[in-house]
Length: 302
Image (cartoon, rainbow, N blue to C red; front, side, top):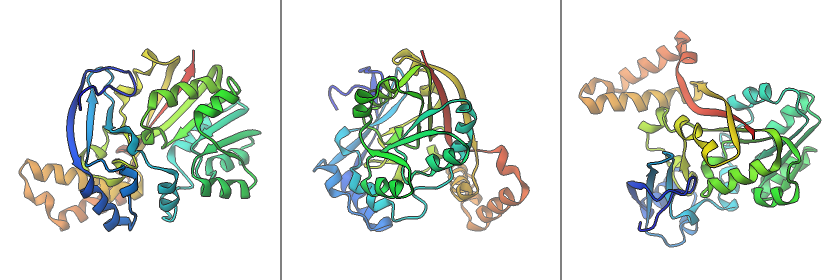
């Protein structure tokens, strides 16, 4: 697409990686989840995945196909969508030790806020754009607003000791504006904590509908996360990788055996071989040494 620029660093040095037919994606969402996404695509016949040659972010265009609140209201019907426990929650609590005023952006049903309350944090707040999730969070006595992050930054600049966003940034078509607002919410030396899918994990060998628009708009790696200080007032202090979760073992095995089979050894495509490898990973304990789906990054505002 002529004139395409990176939504993170603003560079025009981008290259097209792949194009996708919108009708094919619509049909797959309908087949897999019985959800119509036609209105999300606003009549665009194709979507393109680009990669920035400067910051290495991969991003989809056009940007207006990012999912609406209505999409997330439909996805919440699935028990696996708003997972109550995420690996990065416990990692984040280590980095939040000693802090008081914390905001979670995209807090879903408020599970992390509730966990923080149990751990003794006094001032955990959340913002969310799914109205159903907001109502559910408030019903649990949690402090949650239905609010955009830019509005929150304008209302409460410098208020927070920390801002957290777990599995949120990849949904944003304009990540630079999101990160700028997150930085503005922090006081100097406040912490920004991110948890998001690692595009360099086994995900790179899958065709995952949830890693596509209208659900995901960007794809992130450690290489991108280490470069954010070039465009934002943030200093990276930690990156961590999720060990392979039990519920991701099947996807992990399918991704890597499919890759191996594509190189020639067709035995890896055999269901019995995949089943044996899956069982071995689960029973041997080796899973904790394998790299899972998510990556975690903690920054300090400079």
